Length: 170
Image 1 (cartoon, rainbow, N blue to C red):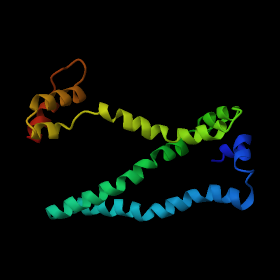
Image 2 (tube, rainbow, N blue to C red):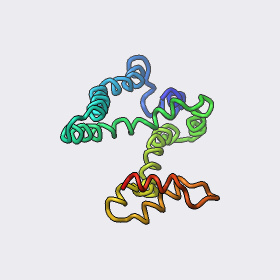
Image 3 (cartoon, rainbow, N blue to C red):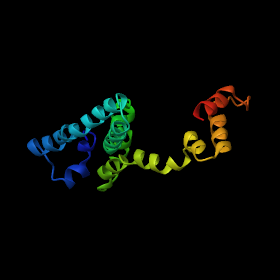
Image 4 (cartoon, helix red, strand yellow):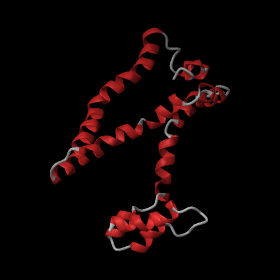
């Protein structure tokens, strides 16, 4: 956000915010984090309950709550990545967009925040099926092929680990 505030088109578009307005723009982010704390606590509590589950319904309910809450944690991943990026790399997109002579100079960096989740969503189709699921549904050859592909060195097509895993899953 700080990088966007240096772009004149952003300032013009939002009426040159100063003082309280600028403080609210920057300060609302942690407020959102605080609001999400109850959901975050559900993730932690559900993980603990799942790990300590003594009965089937306890396991199922903890997983339901865990999966209900997990999109919240997944949606903030791109923000964390941006924060962890090396500072000189982090600002390159914003800097480059600063030369645009339109409102795109601030809206494009904002739009790019959704890029990582979009890539994740579009590539989900490339993820292999679960070998456990395949075996449970009578598709042993496919399960074995996936485990061999993922766990075998390129020069050794047969792998004892993959065979052991299939045996273990069965």
